[in-house]
Length: 214
Image (cartoon, rainbow, N blue to C red; front, side, top):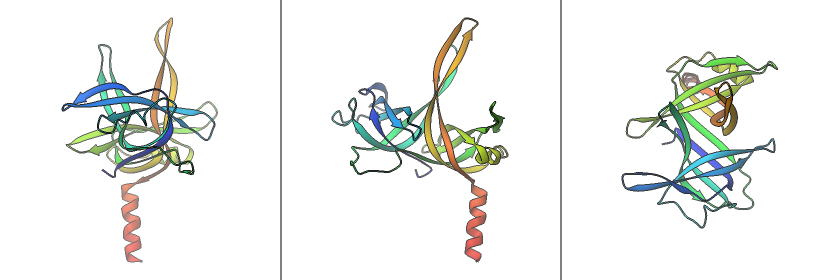
């Protein structure tokens, strides 16, 4: 489906390991290290079907390019339900040396499914947190956490639940401290879509109608 497209180029952190089986088809997971312009890296989870799993390509320290979808599922534990994100591979290749494409690009077309949360950092930077539901085949949906900054944050804070939005950006990883008790703190990793551009479906429709008239 063209409403959920992600392309990543990075270095395989370690060999893929068995993840799960669906309809007698095995799936494997691994972590892909994707560079940022800030000289840091995002460590991103990737899931690949046994049909595409090539051990000569998916091996430690190998540079690869994957194209697919950003998917979500709920992981149930005794303590809580956790939303898990993973990049589901549709295409897999070794990039050309001259390939200078953006190593981390994502586009989703979905619907606001939770009231946006607007906030400011201690330094006054504006941020809005969103959850975007993206339709998938077989009446399923993926729920994508997204974060908007600056002008995008100001715009996104006013989006209503149910609004259709198109979002462009990159997938990022972020470590944070989760306090489990007074004396126990656990380091966890969150994954989210960092927004570079966002538009509402209504605005796009109005623009297309205007262009048709003029």
